[in-house]
Length: 127
Image: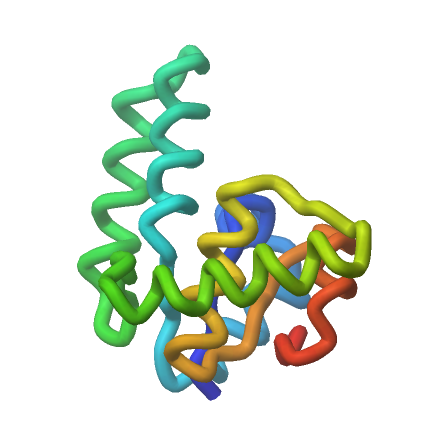
């Protein structure tokens, strides 16, 4: 299974949350969307352990099977589709999470996230 990791689940991984650790140990690939990396670094910049947190993130990104995902032209089409669906449903979600959803759909990934608002996108496989 190829898994996209949301920001809150990366934090769970760092805290050693058993469910997340076990899932990621079994994953064929772990994808960190660029927006997740941005959210993490924004949090680091606001905290007291910026250098330590950055070292941990860089070490994680160097592991086999871990990759940062970036948006491309095709991603923007998925983003537009997600945006339209959520607007029609009257169930908006944060912009960064729409980018995350677009990348998950584009690359046919399972999403590991805690946020319930992803439930408004039933086409996304949640783990």
